[in-house]
Image 1: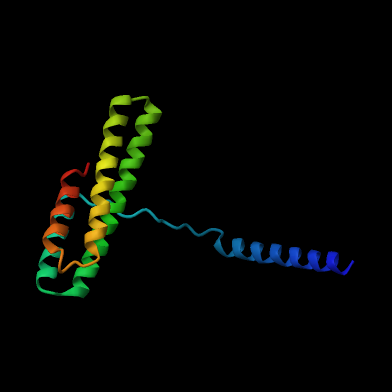
Image 2: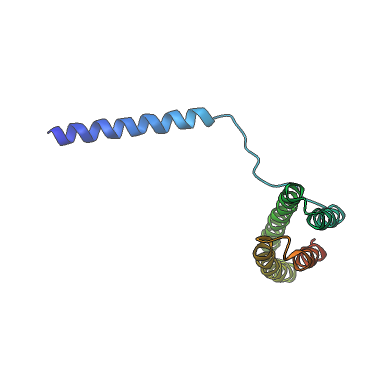
Length: 138
């Protein structure tokens, strides 16, 4: 009997916590989609990153990298949206093109993330890979 009572109390308490959490978040809208960069903006940011790394300005490099990385995430979100739109429209040619672009961009992205670990040592390779990614942006 004591176990049943303990279980009921714990169950009720967990429900109260869950309800309190949902009440706190009701009515708030969170925009988690990164801002899309144009090719020109992206290329400019990569050039600035190159400059900051060359000046050994690590704080500015980190801030610039975050902006570039958000642009990359936005590009992936854009590609996925277009991929699903092509599926919905039944456009197999567009679907195949975007799928191949997604696969190639993901490979470049993995290379970028590996090179990003040491921006100073890998500066030329990193900038080359970032440029390659930018050249294939939609």
